Image (cartoon, rainbow, N blue to C red; front, side):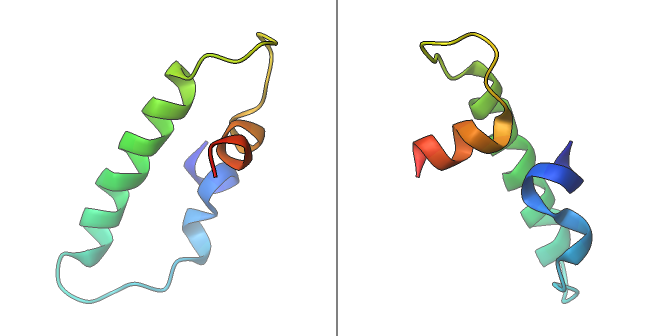
Length: 53
């Protein structure tokens, strides 16, 4: 899911703990997106992300 929504494989961060920190932030954001209430029940995480932006 992280690969599809946040394109995690394309991330080029490699210094120190930056990759781990971004991974934690992405997981927190994905959790918030899953808990987000929408009018329609079946809305993709990518669409929820665009709606939140």
